[in-house]
Image (cartoon, rainbow, N blue to C red; front, side, top):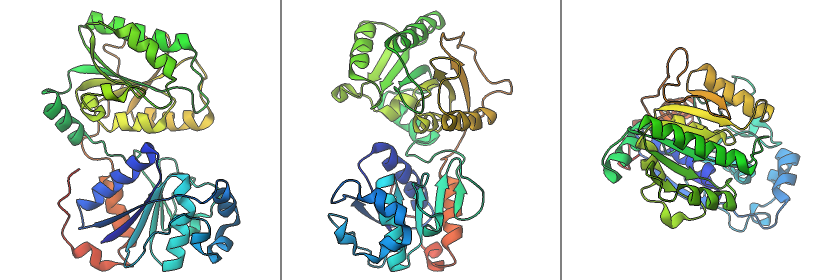
Length: 347
């Protein structure tokens, strides 16, 4: 099965697509062709998304710096707004089934064979609801990374720090209070803490937190976004070593990645009522399933914190069921793809 993967430069979008592609490779033999989408000028993709199928009449090289090869491609996969219109245009031009991971930006859903979303507008085709946002993270891969790189797993806490986003605003003291309160509780519980920052974390906040934790015996290690040379072991191994993960609520993808590790996840918001409607809706879906708990600063006693019904911990790759459904939906067009052996590439 030959798959054309249209990608952009954003890690979150890349991880979504890789999660699905990895799961597909465990089911059928795939030949993966990667192509990074680069637009000739900014703003044109928003115009094309709005004019819909009319834009498919124009040559792609008018808009893209390099047009991908689509020879003998069985499936097109992409994630991220920059890839949305090229995905649809190539699928229409070459009559190839296509999969898009994420919410649509002004485009007609009929231009896609499958649209994978955590919160689709309805349950009818082409939408496919994902239990969790797919990623390269799974309980198996996280535990294996922790064992290989650290030598143990599931003994400590992890703190994943984001920043402003999804209607959330953190002031400087919110960050420092979160770190200080969690480390104070970790000390009482005799637990060490791994810390990671992200692209949303302001550099001056990351610098200050690093200063706060300098010489702190409770710090197990850190992955700093603005000081990547200090990221050892990997972020995946860090999460795999934790028995509990604490995540700032601003990134839905980061929250889903934490849940995908297979441990209890506590989502932290700076104050009551913070966050936009989309964030609250997505968090409530995870809370209702007991995948996460939500707390507001100041932190409650977190050592024994758990949902009333206990944690619902995933045990397998979150993208496994999605891959099965994707193959099921496109098998009518390409029945031969299900007769090939899975590829040997790893998770």
